[in-house]
Image 1 (cartoon, each protein chain N blue to C red):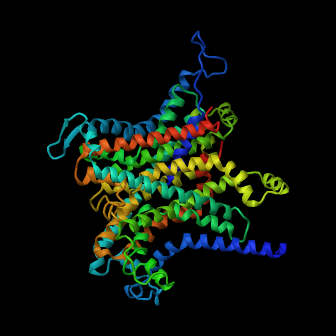
Image 2 (cartoon, helix red, strand yellow; image 1 turned 60 degrees about the horizontal axis):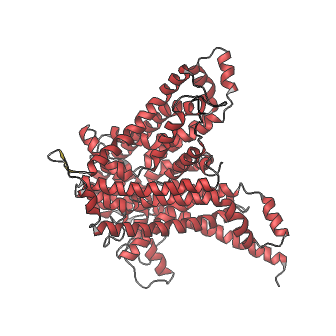
Image 3 (cartoon, rainbow over the protein chains, first blue to last red; image 1 turned 90 degrees about the vertical axis):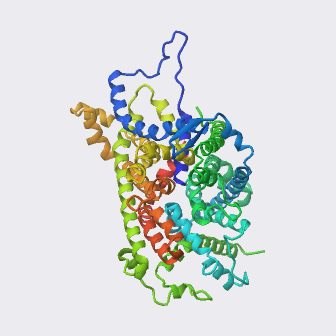
Length: 327
Length: 289
């Protein structure tokens, strides 16, 4: 869900701007801080209450429930939940399949985020030029973003098809391969195919955000650099990239957070195979919980994932602080 | 040494080449799915590949809607049910989001109340929690509440996905409206609610539109929760049905592609028609500030 990137980035940016109220020694608010009116308080609570109930009902309660589950052994048929201490967490260290899925997820995340950023910035630079049809091309960028994940996956599954797929046919007609290949059949090739689908779907989002960032850069800077004899290649590294940093660093971290959680694509394309090459963390946890019905262990694993995400968020907030975004 | 004019022309040509490559890269896969959906088996199984069907046909679309042949009748029934469920879920989520998200975002933007910043921060932090971590406890909770295989469970969960996002976007729109307008309305005898409904909402209409678009697309496209919460025909949404098309039904790729095109039409058309609004929504957090 790329949508969530926007959501997420919104939240941290704004969160960073919140200032902590300052009290002086006497416990009185310093001048300029807000004085709350009771009536306004009540009116406001009425307005936010329904939203708060829904959001926290679907989040806070399950998270706490999940924490309890991660220390228990559940039996759905018997409807029992027995406390077993940290056994589930201890099991993680001996679970080689989970360790492999972590490695594959890290690899997948690095590869996809790298290509999404490089391709995204490159495409944005092209689209930032003025040429006939540039408006149309920008419009087209929204297509992969709006496409449901599942449709994206079945579309590529059909393109990768080993007997009638368009990729095989195209490469053969171009003379690049001699015989049709089973693209999703070997671990390495399946891994790259999944990564490619992901890059295809996520890159246009980077393009759109980088384009917006580019439009904020003052043209006079390039003009001045040109007068000083800077080549356009040099200007790109010295002007464009540094000024894009607020956008790109936000994109890198949020893209990373969502790449780690990749599920839909893998579920349809490979189901995690072959030889667990595409069994990323979310896919593995899903298998543990819903196929093997080990809900306790699944909860423990998902807490590990939450921890990882949490550290990424910290990195993100630090990043903002460095840029002076945090007040 | 190249003449400046030739160099400029070359640059121009390179630019158009890049643009064309980007266009093909984006459009070709999607077009291939559309072409598949108007082909018949004979066209697609030829070697070397025929890239456009000899006789384009809409029979696949008729099949999916009417289920004329025996083989496709069950698929067609499932597809229609899925479409109905998806529509119910997406539309209800959107409406409820508007109903409870708008007042909340207005309160966050305008009213000074105790706990405002803290609750706003909390709402936003909820977005970082991985869905896989939520789905295990939610699954058990839905089982206990007897909401499994019911569209209500999906609507409830989707609300929690959409609301924080919408509250942020809308909060920005409301904060941008000068508060003098409300003061004027209040002087003219409007109540707080009256000022909100008659004065503020009409001005924030583009914010409302963004809300509707995002809420609809998120809930129409969502797959992960739907996969785990719905297993019956009466509750499965379109993404789940499409996945089953590609696994069951003898891996009928023509049927899958036809379904895929139909399932992608609402969000894709909506996005293409309102892209300026969407981009403003997406970028307001990334670029501003």
